Image 1 (cartoon, rainbow, N blue to C red):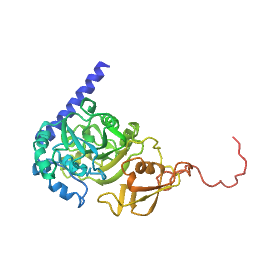
Image 2: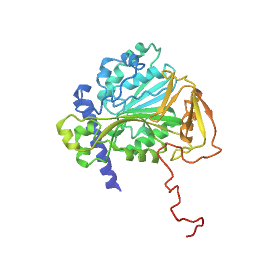
Image 3: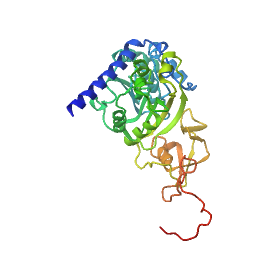
Length: 363
């Protein structure tokens, strides 16, 4: 056991050193990236652009995210950003939570944290806040229990292209679940592969640093999430990634990579499939920047004022979370109607009798 633990610890140290070197010393700006993995894969919505314009240029230049991690309805909330880097997302989220909220950023790279911290007063003044509503902590996202963070103390946890860099993804998900309050949400963007990676790809320092070498096979990610308490992961958006570097492209071969944003809710009672209880919701149109419709995930774009049938899990994701005041809820869980139509599952049994079948049954 001691030998196994020593080997595991050695592997963690090697991977940490690769990431620290790549993001602390090799990369000086996003222009140094060799792939499109660690860049925003999605267009910036109009309402977010003014927030980004308030952020210091040096912070923006050291940004290496792969998506947008600014979920809605954050006013006054407590948010944790894992792998915050130079702090771009922290400072964007700080404007969304407002002066009464709090955003905590965690990162293990000294150079990135130095950039984030030295501009704290600049951003407080830029936002017009009397006091700073951000904190930056040095630490490892697999070891959040070693930091001054209380269990159940965060409404939302975000992460932008960081989970793939972790050598122990189960530990990260386990810690996120512990730190979220009931009804809280892990909203994050990351990189996934269409198959499990061969060791050559996974061990290449550049591919690992550029968020590809540590990418999970997407179905393995679902398994990781579910065994750590996040029963029904919801895909928000996704996009294929291009690898233009000739050496890296030859190395990955036919493997395809995707940037994707997921939301995982910490909710009791979620089921492993979308079950139909005859429920529906009506969106009131009251969430900021979403007057006409609210998008929960890739398959739930809910227009304002329209009765929208939902499965039991979706009902809970709206009824038992910060989104509840913005919806009217129809139905309960008193009657079950089977699997929810269009959820991707169906009864596996033949629906018609074979020719010549009789009404009796025998074994």
